Length: 384
Image 1: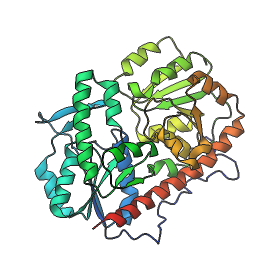
Image 2 (image 1 turned 45 degrees about the horizontal axis):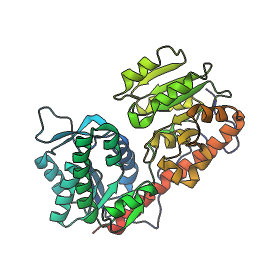
Image 3 (image 1 turned 180 degrees about the horizontal axis):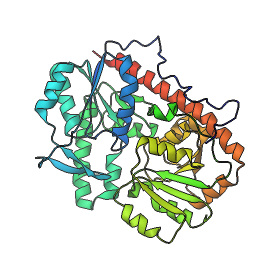
Image 4 (image 1 turned 120 degrees about the vertical axis):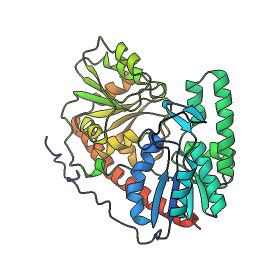
């Protein structure tokens, strides 16, 4: 496959993740993240997995306390809204306390409103460490999508109570979508920081590949779940028989979606993708689709921009809050169908798409770097 030839297109491996900001000194920060999500299993899990490797060199020490695979029945075990394959479980308190004591953190960050998040708050207050909360997901909205009225009422009551406990006891609350600001203010946040999103370095360091000159393949990647609106991708595929639509990911709707696409020869499913497989899928596609009804940020669209591919994203996604990324993003307007939005894109000249995408590639590099510096600065500012 050929490298892009534009003058301003990035050369392979031109991204230097070792760059530091001399104005930020977080070298004395020891941070403990508490998450009820497993690494890379959902958006929040992937966020901190991607963040940790790039942030840790700026700190004294970093550790993520989260569930580990284990056998047996947990005393508390509830499905997570939007991902019934994951469950809220009781932490192994002895394991966590041993690790916490060894780390002796100066600051604790609770990522999720579950048992691990609450344990992080308890240990922080007991040890005298500073405490902040990261509010990534509107779990109440997810519960409205997935659960029946009584279950939804009960779950939302519990989630809201826990979120209030965490937010009111935080020095600040971190969000990655400004639309969440009013929500966390209602929950009692004393101050708010709007944080960027990091990238897995492989998306920046893997040699770039030129976009195909003609639109022959379009892709979707993500959980095959109701909030992702994947059925719209299949409906759109029926209108473009000469274009291949590749759907990467897994989830509760996979069987139903595969059945609905049986008669379409231009739709294929790839299942759950490792990072290198996602990079390959993006590199071999002209652009990415993300027609979700709920998308706090839209990390896969950010990853597409990092690979020099435009992304067609629903208007509600939080990624639109970042003006620096607008050159690689196209919006699915509320008053148009996904088919109509795709039609607009495939009519654009190939060089127009490529130019916009590679401009956004540079913006993706910068936002990733700025995000690491921002985290280092916030942790240093609030640490004890």
